[in-house]
Image (cartoon, rainbow, N blue to C red; front, top):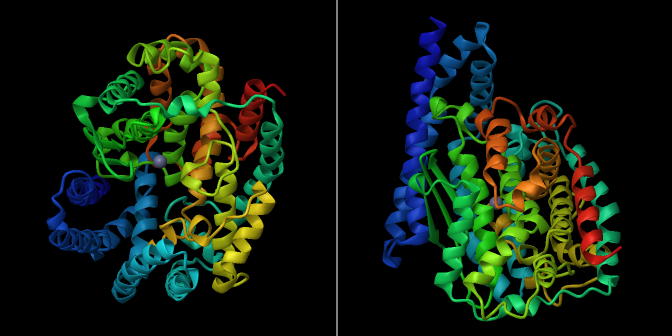
Length: 498
Ligand code: ZN
């Protein structure tokens, strides 16, 4: 009887996942090949699907099936499916349709106001919209919060179930303590990377050829995936056998497209590695946003910017661009792809300073939500904190608190998942290095054992465990910033000679 009930739940979930795939395909098309004029009808198509999906996720039948299953004893896999389905179901039914619609209306207009304000460097014109979005997020958080739960934690649950503002505060404190002095040390080093060598003319077709080679070596399956071009790179997993990644090319930027491909292929390997037998259920879904990001950052930074990786790939890259790289020794190239310097824009930041940009955003949204920080005081708060962290002050708000689209979208409590991804990645990477002879393998271009290790330890497990438990089971330690800061100190100390 339990088996039938469980089977009924799974077949509903498969339908929801199939609908999600249809919606994902429309979204992918919109970012890649859709003719410009189709925008309006595409928005209607996506809204219609979003409504159909919501109705199915929050259907009373799902609640009935969960109620029945929760009465019996279940083996761990099924118990995880019930636990995660219950979590999402309860959240969906707590938010009234009227609030969902108001959020959609407000954020659509807030995005327009943000785009205009950013262009005109005019924070005051965006401020009332930001206030409206925050009010709506607060309303949602109050409905979602469990008794005694912090409002920020209630929002965090959408991306990183079980993670708390308290843990994040400790994590970021650990990062600030180590990273601020590390940036200063690198700045003071006499070694100055020649970043101009990456800005010569590198024809697009050749960049693509090299990027595809690396993605295939990583184990990205092009029979079950694609690589295309979009303005903002992304990865869309429609099913484990249909995973679409994108990048963008600039001919005066050699590595932007490559690291974009490695990043998105890291996400793509996760999607391709999910367990097909549980398709549609939480056992075949990524553990969390942070764990997803750990996979992309691990490949992009820990592998893609490492010395052993370039030992094998630099001669190959030179073969593709013999003229452009003729006067660039491997050591100079390695230093150039590991350039570290304080900058204003998060998306352009290096591996070390990046997390200080995230820290700033975490503090802003935490304090906006708790009421400690007022919207009108945001620019001053931002500039003061950036100066404390990186020693620089943005010349205007477009390069400061207006640079990210997230808040106008209603994305709150999302930023920390970028840094959680880096911290988890460092913990996974340290463990994998201990278990595989990783540096020697990378130096031979033998990348697949790492994919296999990640597949077994992370990908195939889906949502069997919550992120914190997954990290602890795989690495033997709870999530923290330690492995990440040790990795950075060792790597940059060796590169910059301190
Ligand atoms: Zn990513």
